[in-house]
Length: 135
Image (cartoon, rainbow, N blue to C red):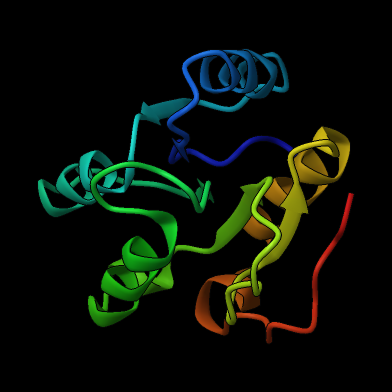
């Protein structure tokens, strides 16, 4: 499977995790747009930025992952972008995402990104909260 033409939008506030994960994704052949928090990512999308998949941390400053996802779902175009949650947060998982991966399981994250970027049904119909990969 070849990488999608649109980049992976990586939203992660940890300044060590974000560049390391971006390098891993680039090594796998993905284009990556890195954002420090949900507000930066939301601004990027509202300016016309594109994404094949959003990798979303939940605990971030300014606009956290839960509030980012709520805004995303209210925008018809942005709501079509599949989301893979990648977090250490132990709280309730977000509903209607392509997957949910703990930060200790980067291998599952890569699998879910590949799946979400290439399966049209994931772009049009979000998965229920019960479908998650736990690391």
